[in-house]
Every structure is written in C-alpha cells, then in structure tokens.
Picture 1: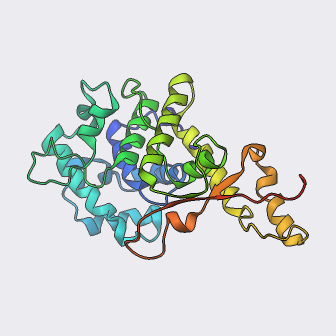
Picture 2: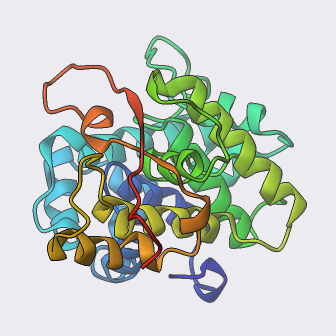
Picture 3: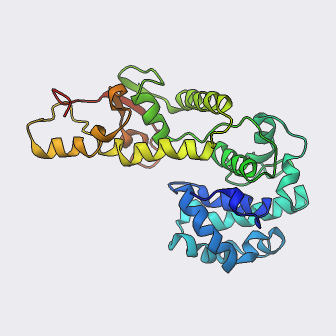
Length: 283
C-alpha cells in the first residue's frame, strides 16, 4: 500500500485528483500506485487550470493508462473536468482552501459532497460524483499526507465491511433482509469509534483489512445450508476460506452479495443475512 508520507513531492491537489480514481469497484492501493506513473506521464491531469481545458474524452483516454478500458458509466473524465472548473471558480484552484477553517466531518461534507444543483455558486455546489465514500477517502489521504489536521472522519463502508461486521456479530442482526442505509450508518459509527480510540491506526489500512478479509475469504465461504460436508470439494472450499480466517470462531452468519449487487438494473440493494453453515466439527 502506498503511504502518502512517502510521496513528498505530491501536492494536496494531486491527492484530490487521485480520489477520482477510487470510484466503483477499484482497489484503492492499486489505483494510487498506478496514479504515480499517471502523474509522471500526464502531469496536465493534476493541474486544474490545464485539466479544465481538456474534454472528458481526452481525459478518459489518458486514464486508460490506469484502467486499460474506462467504464462509460463511471464518467471519470467528465467528473475530472467539471471538478477542475469548480476548484478554480470556487476555491482559487487549491483543494486546501476547501478545508480552511473546518473542524468537523459535517463541515467537510457540506463543502465536498455534490449537491447536484448547478444553479448554486461553484463554492456551494460540491464536487461532481463525490459522495460520502470519496469525501472520506480524500480527507483521510490529506490527513495522512500531513496537509490538514486530523478530523474525525468516517472510514469508507461498503458491502465487504458490512459482511465482516455482520458475520462476526459486531452488527447484531437476525436472519432476514434489511435496507442497507441504516446498517451502513452503524458500520460507520463502529469504524469511527475504533479509529477515535486508536489514533495511530491508519484509517485506510483499517478499511482495506476488512475489505480484503471479505473479498478473499468470505466470498469463498460455504453458504449452502444443505452442504454435504463429506464431499471433498466442500471441505476444500471451507479449508481455503473460513478455516484460515482469524475470526472464524466468531462468525455464525453471512451476507449474500447477490442481493446487495442485484443483476437487474434499478433493483434496490438489500442486505440479506443468512446462517453460515459449519462442518460437524472443526477441521
């Protein structure tokens, strides 16, 4: 993982633009690592005055250096261009001006998160495509790099964090289906409480640890309640996932990814909690 403190020649604006790459199903440490080379190859992308003069398609073509193929629905180039204009018109081209005088997450969110109202003055409209997760990532990276003082910020919560927190009982839910929004808020509160107690813990590292645990272990877990534990393939799957997990003894349930990421376009996300089957004895 890239430590912002090691990138001593990076500016606060560099971190602002890198945050644009962290939308969607992107591993933040990989995107940041590729952005180091992107910055060397296309420095104009990291200068708001030069980036604002580029079209969205021109920016996307440069971003293919990171993504190979830029997904159309992500609109990276459009966000990059619009936010360069907003940064210039609203904040004199410096992201640090956004953080001037703010001390709470609510104040940061009021300035950063997109209001989706372009009748507002540039200073008041927020940044295109920036929601809670990107606001948190931007703020955390600026803190880690030493550009702004510590602010109690949420750590970015997504499906993988929820799955670990629910599976281990950190968020207590019975079997059933739930709306994600209030559960995400609880996950945020848990993460914030932990990070406020352990000030030396890197919020991004904390977030990545939970993310990797879910992605690499929980996704392979045996979820079929009628699983035949005498089947070698079932046992092999267990040994490659839950049996290796340091939290296995605490884990009695899981969350189904297929309901959180429905195939049908426009279908609502649902947190579906089901019991996690275990072998008759610990293997």
